[in-house]
Each structure stands twice: as C-alpha cells, then as structure tokens.
Length: 139
Image 1: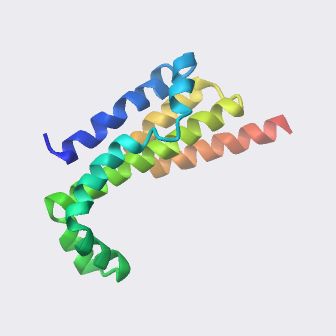
Image 2: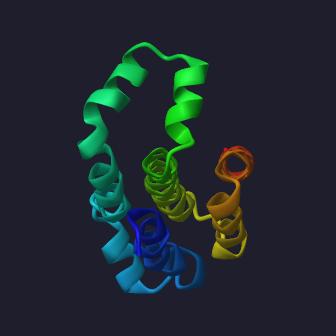
Image 3: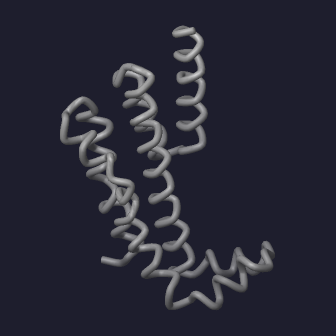
C-alpha cells in the first residue's frame, strides 16, 4: 500500500463519525482534537519531504508546465491527494461543529458532509447557504 492509498483510509473513520454518528458523545469528543487532519498529513509529509527542494522551487515560482509535470508523477499526485484529504477533513470538522453550534439538524449536515467528501467546494457552499439561512431564522 502506498501513501496515496493510505491517505483516505486514515481520514475515513473521522468522516464516518461525523456523518453516521453525529450526536454520539464520543464523536464530538474525538473531533474536538485539532489534530484530526494529522493522519492524512502524515502521508503528505512522507511524500513531500524526499522532494522538498523540487516542490519548494515549484511553489516559489509557480509555472503551469512545471506544476503539471510534478503532478504527473506518482509522488506529486499522491501529495496533492493527501493535501486534499487533510484539508477537506479540516473543513468538514469546522462544518460539523458549526452545525452543532447553530443547531442545524444532522439530517441536513450529514448529507452536506457526504457531498464534501466528493466535491468539497460544493459541500462548503451548500453548508454556508444552510448556515446563513439558519442565522437569519434565529435573528
């Protein structure tokens, strides 16, 4: 199993807790840790450290051709995948707690979290719309 293959399985238990057991007391307890996205980030660091110079040069002077070439490598694609998994989880964690704080039903938040796994920008926008409606309804 490669680091690419490992990134999502390391994040999946956290997603499952937020989506399928949102009101279980252990879910909130576990998700409270700011270190939740750390597991998929381990994959990111494992992929980037051996190529830090190459990746750093590409990030300091972004060029579409150079970035395309790096992302076409197994380590480059894995690196971006682990990055996406970690940051999607970070965003989902915020959405989970914000939904709880705003008393948005898990019947609404859970499907949005599921959407966020596959299409995080759409999930985030959907959540922000629901959140805005909720805030207005409480005013």
